[in-house]
Image (cartoon, rainbow, N blue to C red):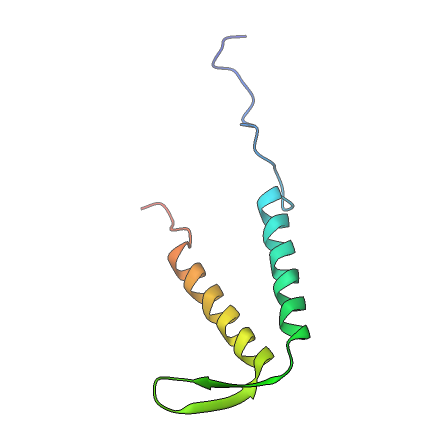
Length: 80
């Protein structure tokens, strides 16, 4: 067996449940818990108008905007 005949496993986790995905899942659960326990109404200034809304909805909106931005910036591109 020559040195070039090594398995294709490069030490990275295989399959759907990788350490990175577990970490992201834990962070998402913590964010959801944080959003659920913050239910008071708050006044938020959006440029000029002030909006009164539950804090959980503002946090959820920012989380979704962050997911969208992160997904757009770090999406995997196909080979060209």
